[in-house]
Length: 167
Image (tube, rainbow, N blue to C red; front, side, top):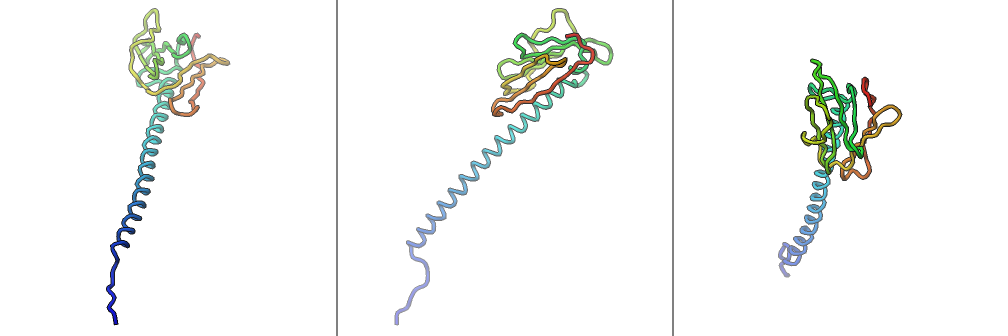
């Protein structure tokens, strides 16, 4: 009677390792795609949250600088891609606040009131990757539209009626 040796043949081991390699490669590919998609989604969510915060700052103010609601006088940039307003701080000091788009960067500047305002220059970048920043006067209020690059047509829109402004 023959004695049979128990175990796996070399062919069985090679086939098993090959199948396992294919499965691991497929799982790795799915994981890489998930991680890349998660990173893009997280970045896009951050940019959208920042865009909402910038609009809120424009409308309601930031720090000691009043927002557009408290404006005494408002001017828009030629082409409608910027807005400037004069407002008074708590101590009565008048300031000029400007938001304007240059390329895909949205800038904000705040300085003491001066003749010949607005300048549409200086300031610092408050939001990058902006596709559209437009201001129009409609039905007694300023309509502000802000869209980010890569948002497939989504835009943030708000309407503001300054309390004291001359337009």
